[in-house]
Amino acid sequence: MKMLNNIKLRNKLLICYGSLMIFAVSLAGLLTYQKIQSYIYNQSSKSYSQTLNQVAMNIDYKMNTHQELLNPYITNHKFIAALNTTYYSPADYTYQYLDNLRSIFELERRYPSIKNIIIYKKNDTMPDIGTYPDKPSISDAENTIIDIAYAEQRAWYQKHFTNLDETDLAGLIALSNASIWTVNDNRSLISIIKPIMYNNDKLVGIVEMQLRLKDIFQDGMFSEHSPEELFYMANDDGEIRFQSNPELPPIAAPSENPMFDNESAGSWLAEGDRTKKLVLYQTNRHSGWKYVLEVPMDSLMLSAQSIRNFTVAILIGSILISILLTLAISRVLSRRISLLAKHMERQEDLTLEIGPSVDGRDEIGMLMRNYNRMIKRIRELIEELRTSQQLQKETEIKSLQAQINPHFLYNTLATINWMAADNETKKIIDMVNNLATFYRLSLNSGKEYLRISEEIRHVQTYVEIQKIRLEDMINITFDIEDKILTFHTLKLILQPFVENAILHGAEHKDGTTNIAIKGHLSHEESCVIFEIIDDGIGMDLPSHNQYVSNGGYGIHNVNEKIQLQHGHQYGVRLFSKLGIGTRVVIRIPVLE
Image (cartoon, rainbow, N blue to C red; front, side):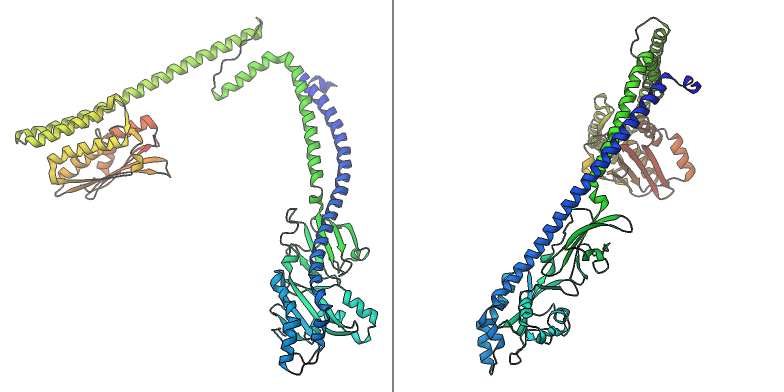
């Protein structure tokens, strides 16, 4: 009892209601689950038994249908007489073959499931027709009439056709009506064997109809169920001759389990290496074949698992309901304190939400109102700080812009000045026109961003101005992907580097300086990359470091401009080697 005194009321209610609900629902769920599990097991066993019975009936129907195809021939007097006649010339045999024997081989053409038909003859005056390998497994024979000696090698012959001389008439008639079915050793063919009897008391031959096993036992049988389910067929000696899954060993082979000998059909539970299985079997009363289906208990009781999960869900739901009821009761007592605590916890993410107003003039109401005033003041201070920082950034960007543009104007006016001294009027006109275009794009109606196509045009006007002055001293090429031309960029990020390439490269180098301006979209880095590459004089490491740190009109200004707007993952990188040249790489975000 002392322990209960130290537990909060909310927790006491949770313990009492929760324990009661767990006990009641668990007991009801356990009893319900056991009852339903027994019902589902019986219904599932019945369903699988019906399925196996249907499969067995389908197989028997196909086999009997094919077997019926042979009956018109083995009971036909002319067909039997053709096998029993003594032939003195090939012409006589040819006539009998064409008139009475050949028609049975037409079944192969009419029924795709028939692989081959073989007639084993006892008539020594009949020539062999077709091919027959000298071994028990026959798969290559075609339209074959051969000596019965070949059949004597087969297991089915030794089982059913030996000692016929000692068999009475009733036994011979029973043999004629028997269903002799067999599967070849490589399990690709299934054969129907029928004796050809003369006057029901003399064996004149045996006909074997070979069927494709896959046409009788369809591929994928029972594949809609669990992959652990196994269907197989065993002959009357208990040897397994077909398996739906050859890689899954049977848990109860008929040759090893006496349970199969009890009845023609039945089922029982068998223990496997990993799970229990329900074993169901059916026996064909004519051929003695056994059709067996092994079903894992996990698959059999899949519906019961759903019931179990549903019961657990009910249990959890009931517990949640009891907890919600307990929380509702406790909330009446501590609602305002809980609201304040929740709002204070939310401020850990700096959301700074204003809490709801609280009625009442007691200490809790005063605390909540003071808390809201504090949050409101913090939000005002943060907004003031954000505005101040934005103004500072804009001022820095305008300052950097002011450093870049006057520098170019100074160089351009100096160029016009020396051309005026030489009276090069046409060049001055061209340069002034290009300068007008250059500054129109530079001003850009006061906007800091423009399309990349306009930035490229801006550089091109600058290049045209410099070509008027330097003529053959520079050779500039552009390689810009078309798909980035519609993207936007900060203005004046390329021209300063082209200018530096000319001033620090071309003007201090003998011969022509080649400058390449490239631009492409980098999918890996999700950014647009520009490159300005020249083969000018380059610079050594000390000059490179000084240029990066203090390059007033070059990399430093543009780099700060880009990073102030877009962050430090973008900007400018410089690669240079004295006497070889310089490569500038500019990364900007994709702005469509």
